[in-house]
Image (cartoon, rainbow, N blue to C red; front, side, top):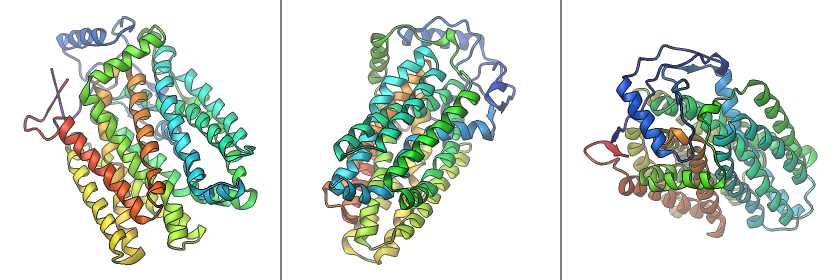
Length: 460
């Protein structure tokens, strides 16, 4: 069958959803034949899935979440980003205090991303089996514990290992948040909500480095991990009190590792899903090459002070948040796939300009920063739309699909972004990594999906 590139919207009659903290809107009555076809397809595609009575739909059409609900999901999604961004300005101090190198200090950030990739692969299927609440509550609690252990790490090797564990456990928050979104929304609705979450997630680049710098200035970099533990405690309490269970027992999947493996095999066989899942990771690689490389490029290479760097980080965060909000507005008027296929070539163009400026030195730091801001403003356009389209293809295993997307993103970002340091750690190295990631994203879209085909349809 074919799925329109504008993204699928749910048409099932929604039950009461006031527990989600939103305003329920009437949904259109589905065609009985379409409902039967959907049920047959779902049961055929999901090994180990429990029979559905049809009483609990997979998504809600017309449901509008309120600000508190968006804030809760946004803070869950932001936990891994906060765990890195609040710590980024402390990297030079970590290298000095633990008698290590800049590359080893940067590895503590990459380690958390790779741990998060594995964590999402494990926790996603667990949330499909046991529901959404239990995995996130356990994961955030263990994030608190590992944050406290990071605060007393005696060596760089120990810190790297603990950061892997920290990433593994706090992945529960982000993967469950994405699965909750897919439990209730698909297509343009999901893309719009994910884009609005970027407003919350974008607060991390705006304030986290400044907050982390102030904490480190008073209590050292170890105090930053104490603050992360305190944030984790606050998030745990809010999740425990406010996050409803969005996966009823009737829709949970029986089985253990074998069932999870069959779920991932189903996803891997869908080459269009895999292609869409890769694109957010390549966007993450662009962002993380900036996050990891910019302290050394701008502070050591261009002589910015810690306060100047924090201010610049906040200004670039405005670009990230602004781009996400423009996408949230745009996705209601333009098909998500159309946004992706326009944004990726534009992003590649800006990264090439950035590379040319870095190599030639034309315009100095001011022009470099302007183009960098434009690159970062484009980062949050493609990932929400690609993720929403990908999730709409496998709503029956939303946790597993969300885990696959998140893990792929974390793994790609974690493996590519350290290249900035390995290639020299300067502006040219950062630009080369960005160009490579932007080129790869465009090639994946063009060669591995039908996005640029004239028929404008996705073959499932």
